[in-house]
Length: 497
Image 1: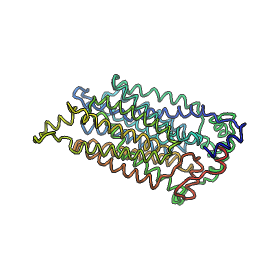
Image 2 (image 1 turned 135 degrees about the horizontal axis):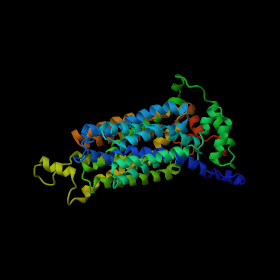
Image 3 (image 1 turned 30 degrees about the horizontal axis):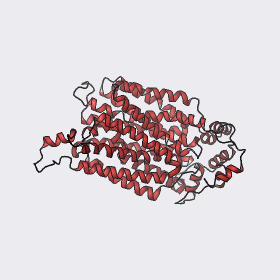
Image 4 (image 1 turned 60 degrees about the horizontal axis):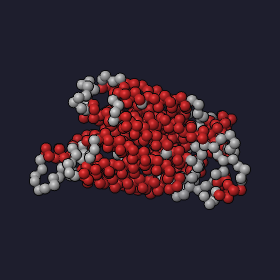
C-alpha cells in the first residue's frame, strides 16, 4: 500500500479501472463450476437410497456397484481433462467451457430418466467428463481475463461456486426426489451457455492468434472503456512475443518443468488428502459413525461450513497470501484427520471391562450413542474442520496457482494434464475408499489422509512460490530466471498498478 499511494496521488486524472463487466464474465464462466460441484456430490445423498432394500430392483446397488457409481465420475473427469488439453488450444478457453454443456446435459438426462444401472453409470461418467473440461478451462480463462489486483479473489470463484453447487444439492436432497435433482442440474448449464455467448475471448488467446484489434477491444471491454490499457496490453504482447514453439528440450528448462511439476504435484496431493471420497460418500460415512444427527443433515451442515471457509479464503487471498493459507490449510487437515484416525482406530471399545461382542460393536458404530452427545458430535466437528481447512487453502489455491504459474505457451495443454492427473488420482482413491472401509473400517483411509497432509505441509514449504500481487508476466519471468524465493515486481507493472 505504501509503494502504491504516491502513484495514485501523482496521477489524479487517471480513471479507475471498472471491473463490473469482468465480474459478469467470471460469473458466466463459473456457472460451469456450480454444475461441477453439484454433480460431484450427487452420489452422496443418492447412494443410500439406491443401496436401500426399498430401492427399485432395477437400480439397486451392492458395494461393488456403489463403488463404481461413486468413483466413475472421477474417471469421466480425467477423460474431460484429456479432452481439454486439445480443446483449450484448438478452440480456446471460452468455447471449451461452452462445449462442456453437451456431456453435462446428456448425463443429467440419463440419470433423471434412468430405468437401468447402465444409465446411472453412463450419466455419472458424462457429468464427470463435463466437470473435467470445466476444471481445466475455467481457472485459465479467469486468470487470463483478470487484472492482477483482483485475480486472487476471482481465482477463488471457481471453488466458491463449486461449493455452492454442492450445498444446493445437499439442500435439495432434504426434500426433492433424486430423479428431479438430476433434472434440476441442467438449468445452470443452459444459463452458462447463454451468458458465455456474449462474453469476450481471452485477450491473451486472441493475441496469440494474431488478432490484435480484437484482443485490444476485449481487454478494454473487461477493464472499462475509459481505462488506459496500454501498459497491460504491451506487457501481454511482450510475453507472447517471447514465446516460441515449445520443444521437448524446452521442457527441461526451469521456465517449463518447474511450474508444470508444481501444478501436477499440487493436484495429486490435493486429491490424496481424501477430499473427493469424503464428499462423494459423505452421508455414507456419517451413517457408519457416531453422528449425532441424521446423515443428510450432517452433510448439509458440512456443505454450509465449506461455503463459509471458501468465502473466508477469498477475502484473505490478497491479504494473507497463498503460502500462509496453504500452511493453515495443511495444519487444519492434519489435526482433523489425526483425530478421526484415533476415533475410528478402536470404535468398538466398551466403556466397561465387559468383553465386547460383535452386535454391540455394530450397533455402536452405526447408530448414535445415547447419553454421549460429545462422542456423537466429534466425527461431525472433525469433518467440518477438515472441510474448512481444505476449502481455505488446498481447495481454491491449487486451482488458482495452476492458472497463475503455468507458462502461456503450455497453459492449455498443461492445465489439461493437471486435471487428468488430478482426476485419475481421485478415481483411484475414491474407488479404493469403499473397499478399505468395508475391510478395515474408516481408520485406514483416515490414516492415509493424515500422512498426505504432512506431505502437503512440506511441499508448500519447499516448492511453492508466493504469487500474491504479481502479474502473470512477472510470475513467468520468475521461472525463466530460475529463482527460488520471491517473485519481484517489474517496473512497468509497478507503474501500472
